[in-house]
Length: 414
Ligand SMILES: CC1=C(CCC(=O)O)c2cc3nc(cc4[nH]c(cc5[nH]c(cc1n2)c(C)c5CCC(=O)O)c(CCC(=O)O)c4C)C(CCC(=O)O)=C3C
Ligand SMILES: [Fe+2]
Image (cartoon, rainbow, N blue to C red; front, side, top):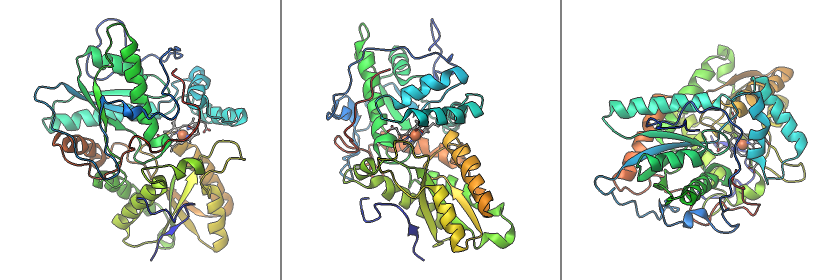
């Protein structure tokens, strides 16, 4: 049975740190502060930040020569690099301004999204989820006898990646394996994480006596990694089992991911279209692990941007309406595009999409995300081990110098 891929481009084959000494290894427990403006130079539009030769490894589109094994004695670390989220009501607007600066998101959309956060006391669960992931990775490293410190930095809120970079430099870290909390290609999910590292290195170089701090390599996309797939498959099976027995076989399985502008999707990955292609491949693996060959759909959620700009469609809510009209009785949503149950998941799916399903009389279940599933946690160690062994990138995808670039204002340094 062929999967019903509803993606637009289905024809694309492409694949604060405390004062004084701060204890290693994790910059946790930051106070929530309004970000300071820094005057770090921007990546000029059109110039890829990963042309910075100190960003040591690029897993370019299948042509990855592999990294050299690390020189003996090099002091290394892992950085969990994430999106960031507010920690209280007063953080919400400054956080949203950080996310959307220069992005052309309409102000009324920001007001709406702020409400989603205020609904949860202004606290995004993403930070607690990242702390839990880091604790699990540290425990996994320790159990495997791997002595590698784990740091945490964010793009849009404390602990900011710039501050953590300075901390790693102060701690004598020479090289960092960057693990982004995002599995797939796109300007949002891959390239911006490269840009975050480049910005952090520029900021560190701008400090007195600074030299950019540790060199870095971003770990490859992991949507097809067995650890990620197993975590999502277990969650999908568990969600399916919550439906009444007579609905399970007929329930439609629906993968979701963050919508992105069509123009961004067209530029994702070395030959374009990689966001949808990687998501489809990942969702297929997840479904096959639960119910081999079973049909599923891939649709989009959390669209922002002005209506005049086309984004990937259909939206999950519209899709639920179409399914109900077809006579489908129940759905299981699995948000394959995210790695934890943050606001985009618990608001846009558990609240909005669940409400749509209720209105339509559709049975509804939502699968969890990878979170701290042991196979997902172990995946981080495996990805690092591959790079340390000098192996070619397993997946062969990570945004090379020129890909995923969309012409829009560079995100100013905070
Ligand atoms: C592909 C993708 C991922 C997955 C990959 C990854 O994880 O990186 C993702 C994750 C996330 N997106 C998040 C939050 C937001 N995203 C926004 C805006 C946007 N997202 C986009 C795409 C993505 N976003 C895009 C193209 C925009 C338009 C602005 C622009 O062109 O850059 C806005 C602005 C308001 C709005 O319009 O919604 C917010 C608040 C949170 C945090 C949730 C929490 O706090 O719990 C997370 C993990
Ligand atoms: Fe987003």
